[in-house]
Image (cartoon, rainbow, N blue to C red; front, side, top):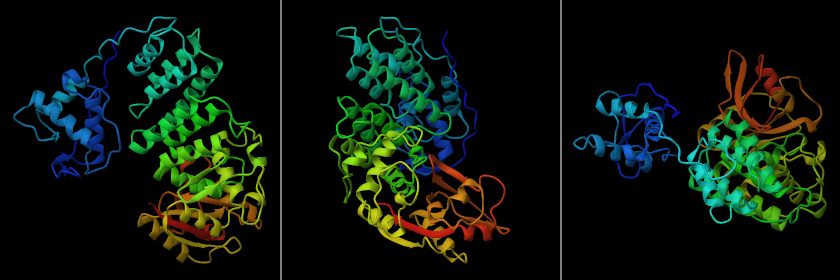
Length: 461
C-alpha cells in the first residue's frame, strides 16, 4: 500500500533574504529553508517538486542554487504570474506545497528479479537492477557501486539501509567480503543517523565518498596487513558524513584526533585522500605535513575495542611519524602518546591552517580567567580552538591530577560560559562531536581552572 507523505505544518517566517551570488530574492532563515526543502523533496518532479533532489548546507539568508531553482520551477508550473523564488508564509503557494506533499507516494518501481522482498527505496533497487543486468551475479565491485549509488544524493535513509541489509541477507551470489562490507555500513550508518545527521552532499564530501568507494573496489591489505580494507573504507565514509564519529577511544591519541577532526570538517577530501594513500602506500600527506609511520606500527594489530581501524590508521600514523621525543607504537595509553602544545601547533601550521596560536603548559594550570576569555574570543572570531584540560573534567570528576598522562586535548565547540561561578561548554572528544561539560552536576570556576592548561588555536584555510 502506498505510504502517505508526511505533512509539515510548521509556519514560515515573513522574511526574505538575498541569494549569495545573484542577489535575487530567496528563502530566508535556515528553518524556513528546511521546511520548503522538505516539502519540495516529498513532491515528484512531474508534479513540480524536487523528488529528494535538494541537498546541501542550509544557511539562513543564503539560498542554494538548487533551492532557488526548485522554487521557481514549482511557481512556474502552478503560479506562472508570481515567480518570485520565495515561498510566502501564507497564501496559495505554501498551501499547494503542503497539499502535494501530503499525497500518497507513487508505487515503487518493480523490484529486480531474484529472491528479494519489497524494496523501500528507489536508489538501492535501481542500482541493484543495473548490477544484475549482465549476468545476474553480484561481484564485489558491483556491490561497492550499489553503495556508491545509495550515497549519491548525499543522504542515507532508514529505507535505504533496510534495502542494503536485504541484499546482504537474501542475495544468493554475494561474496562473503561484500556481505560483510554491507553489514558494517548498515550497522554503523544506522547507529549514526539515530543520533546525528548523515551528510555527504557537499562537493568535498562527495569527492571523499568517491575516494572511499574507489578504495574499496581494490584487493589486498597493502601496507597494513592487520587492517581490513573495507572496514577502513566504511570508516572513512562514516567520519566524512559526521566528523564527530572520529574516536581515539582507549588510545592516548587525543592530539592527533584534535587535528584530524578539524581537517575532517574543513577538508574532508584531503582526509579521505590521506587515509587511502596511507593504507595503500604506507605514507601520506596533510597539506605540507608528511606522514610516514614505521613498519612496526603498520604491522601492529590493534583490538577493535581499543580503536577503530580507520582511526588507528590515521591517528597513530601521525603520532608515530611525528614523534619529537618519544616513540609511539602501541595502542596502550600512557606517556608515549602525549602531544605537546608545541607539536600540535606545528601540525596545524603544516596542515594548512594560518595564524596558529599556542598558549598552553602541561605543568601549570590556569590561575585566572584571562586564558579562558582569549580562547572564547578566538572561537568567536572563527578560529578552531583546542583546549588542554584534565581528562577528569570530561569524566565529571573535578579533581586535580598530578599525572600529566591524564591531560587531554579536546576541541572547543561552544563558548565557555561562566555564570554564577559555574562553567559550562561543549567539546569534541571520544567520538562525540558536541559533548557537554560537565556531563552532570556542576563545574565550579575553581575546579575548572585547576584542570585547565590552555589552548592551541588556528584559523581555517
